[in-house]
Every structure is written in structure tokens, then in C-alpha cells.
Length: 79
Image 1 (cartoon, helix red, strand yellow):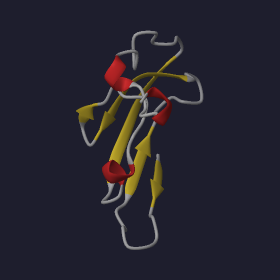
Image 2 (tube, one colour):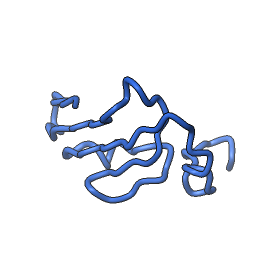
Image 3 (cartoon, helix red, strand yellow):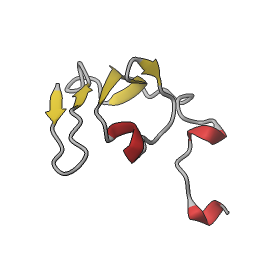
């Protein structure tokens, strides 16, 4: 468990949990503030006021996670 306390005007606490990460290096699933999160990115606005990220780790890669078009991070090169 990691707790990040940002400085500056946005002072929300960010809590990151990835139980078993030392033995299981792959992300099976992820939750952002208790909701399933399939995206391969998290925006600043999602984190600025504080957030909880919980990763479920696995010994095998989840080749289906984050593969939908809406799960890809924004890119100016795709405009």
C-alpha cells in the first residue's frame, strides 16, 4: 500500500494498493474509487481531489484488459 499526499492547490490523498505485486507482476484488473477501471490511463482530474487505486495482480497477463478502443490513452496523433 502506497499513500501519496500531493502538494499544491489539489491536496487529495491518493491510495494505491497492489496486493501480491512482488509475486504477481501482471495487472488482472483495476478499480478506481471502488469502480471497475479497464482503461490504460488515469487522468489528472480523476486523481486531483484524492483517489483510491486497487490493482488485482496475476502471474499471467490478462490479454483482454484494456484492449477496447475507449481504454487506450488519448493521443493527438490519432486526430
